Length: 405
Image (cartoon, rainbow, N blue to C red; front, side):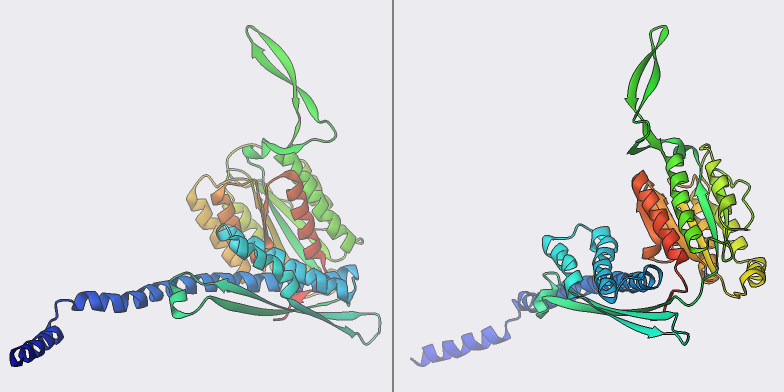
């Protein structure tokens, strides 16, 4: 029995002092911590992305509702419903739907934003009693699901909350100068997916043997023709806001492999309409000089002086509308275009961009140049192009609307 006792004590000491299994034990202890740390790093990047998208959506929702109150005379209840619906739709377009394919749960959560968001309207009557100021506040939240590694720390989801306030007034007209930068490269002569309603078919001739044969084919709207209709809808919004041509000045420049001669800034929209209607599609693509010209002209001191002389406004709104249907022929043109967009934004120019059936690189350039996500439009057919330009016209012509928070 004495021997057994000594053996047991020796075995115990050996077990305690034996380090042969330390690596396995330490791995078992540290592995969950390391995995959780990796999960947190990945989820932090996702949280930053989602918060940015949700804040942009809230800003756009508040601005849209405030603008509609001032420009369309809708009720407070309609403005609140518009803000909440706009928040959900904008977030869906710019967040998960654009970065990755959302899960079913994520899609449901995005759709629920319209129900869970809070919005309020405060009206203030002007001293004359004939004007009103509208303040719209939008609050929204979204629960971001954590990945399996972060869940090891006990975090199933993290709530992102944002708020935004926008103010608008019906007190006065908002003077503006708008410069259109439009693509007229050869690809603008291609078909869209939209059938020409006025003439849905056309006769096409083709070589058959030694002679020519004909056949009837679908007649699609050309991209360049869709652009002309879209610009007409945009200027209609400006004409409605300024029927006497006292507050709106417009100009335009077109480009293919180089920029063409632009119009000069003029009151109203007639010169721009005539310019765009005369465009034909030909050549390559280089947007750099056209964007440079638009920036220099819309920020020129002569523009401010023209408004001061005509309507007394010392700080007119400055807008550039930039569209393309393709890629620049050289990446150096992308670099130059981005630089001029940076200069324009630094000078408080609002830049709206429209990618019209454009490939990836063209889309990325226009996303970069847009003032924010609500200023970027991805039009995949003629109808979407027209709708985009019409909405840009509505936004630009809203009376004295500004984001206050």
